[in-house]
Every structure is written in C-alpha cells, then in structure tokens.
Length: 352
Image 1: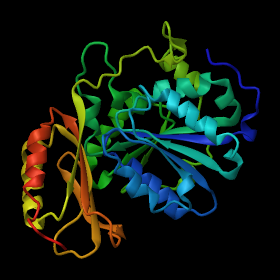
Image 2: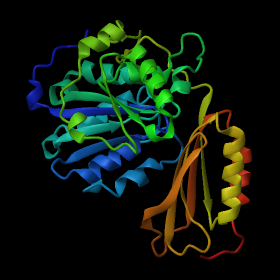
Image 3: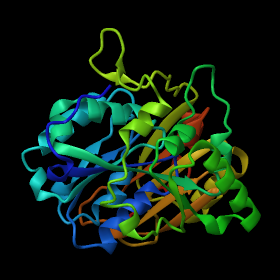
Image 4: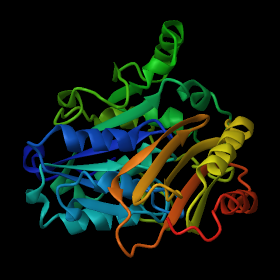
C-alpha cells in the first residue's frame, strides 16, 4: 500500500501522465495544450524511447522557455529510468511553484502502472506533486489491433494497461474510421475500462477543461486493477506492478545522415517501406533536409501506413549542419537495410 502523504493535495503541484500507444497523438496533444492556453505555465517532461530524440524538436518550439522542457531519452519510464523520473521531479521541488502543472509525456511503450507506483511510493515526491489524472490517447484507426495483440506468456499488453489505468481516454483520429467501427471500438474500450470518460477527437484537439485540473486520479481504483502495485521486488527499492514489460520484439532504429535528401527518392523509399512493412512499423518520425528547398526544415510523423508530412516551424540556421534524423520503432527492424536505403536518397555534392 502506498504511504499516506502528509501534504494536502491542494498544496501540491498537479501532475498529469499523458499515455497512449505509439502514434496515438501524445506529442500533438502537448503542442495543442501549449499553444491553445496561456493561463497556465506547464512544465513538460518528455520521455523518448529511441536512439535519437525527435519529439523534443516537435515540442520545444511551443515552450514559453527552454527550461520548461525536460528530456529523459535513455529508456522507457516504466522500466529502467524510474529512478531518473524521481530525480527529475526532485530537482523540480524547489522551483515547482513557478509552474501551474507538470506533464509527463510517456513513451508509447510505457505501462502506466509502475510509473504511478513510483510516484506514489516516494514520500518526498508525493508530498510535493499530486497526480491529477492519467490521460490516455487511443488512435481510433489502430487501437483495436494493439489491444488484441498477443504477447508472450506473462508479458503485459501496454495498450491494454494504458486504457485500463486511465481517468480520461481521448479516442483520437475518429475521422479515419466509419461510424460502425467507432461504435465497436468504444465497446472494446468499455470492456477494459468502464469508469473513464471517452472523449472523441481529431488531431488531439479537446476541451482542455476536461483533462487539466480535473483531480480525477483514484489510487484505490489502481490497486483494484493491480493488487500488487506497490509490492517491491527483492533487492529493489522500486515498486513493481507484478507484470512483465516485454520489449524483446520491439526495437528503435535511429538514423542520421548529413547532406541533402532527394525528394522523389525519399518519397519512393517511404512509400515502398509502408506498403511492405506497415503492420510491423509502429511509429516513424523525422526531421529532414531536402535539396532544392532552401533553409526550410521538414518533419514527418507516421503511424503504421499513415504519414503526416510538412514544413517545420523552424528553419536551418546559417552554419548549421544539414543532418536529417529519422527514427523507426517497430518489430524486426533491419537497421542495415534502412540505413542503406536512406543513404541512397542523398544527392551527391548538393549544397542546397
């Protein structure tokens, strides 16, 4: 059982956990929150699963101050870096009054249960931060497949855990499914979590009053879901959810290439990749430098076969190295093949 905090919740800094499977729209939601409201100053903790941090570039342009963005990019918050999360929040204690709220954007592979257990089991953290809500984004197009994915014996299905432990579920990208499909998806979600409000949305746009400052977190509900939530493993000070988080089949492949990419070649490569590997490619994203586009940076974010591509909010600066960074997250990724394909898209000798 979690220790009882000695500080009343109203004196604590609200803490929101933003969860959801890869590509559900978490970063888009964070950007929406940062651009749509100016009344609250929010500190964002960014947890990136991957060798190259792309999400930081997508979020930081909308921060009021660089100090408002904290990056933890060396692993999954529900696994090896829970100690880092505690240290990160510990470092915020003295200046937490500068913020109206703190948001943790978890990696899409994070199980929220051990994150909750870590936050509630640390007396120092629990005395200063109150979990306001666990908000889960679910892609209407792909959540059914993720919820039904078969895992090895004893391994947790992260998508199921994310839905089960949430206080609010944003059923995102509803424009990509039919009304009948949407009805079926809502029924599937209700089987897992019949307490949380399900809010339908597109492009992660939602009434912010429904997800910020709502004080809807219930620790007793979490314990009912996972009775051993606060049980500590032998030889460890950190609690465990009692379930195995399996990443053996999932990997992240980060590729950096310097120079200028050929637009047609890159488009053909991505089209062929998505046509043949869409099911295994959970997430793809990148910041790109193209020949013939001047100083304009380009970004793309993909979920399975669907890609959003367009100009970035920032330009390549004078003297800045033109390094395109691309991350693929999925099953059975062939790093050598992907690297060679991307390198073949470079334009020899191009200078702009």
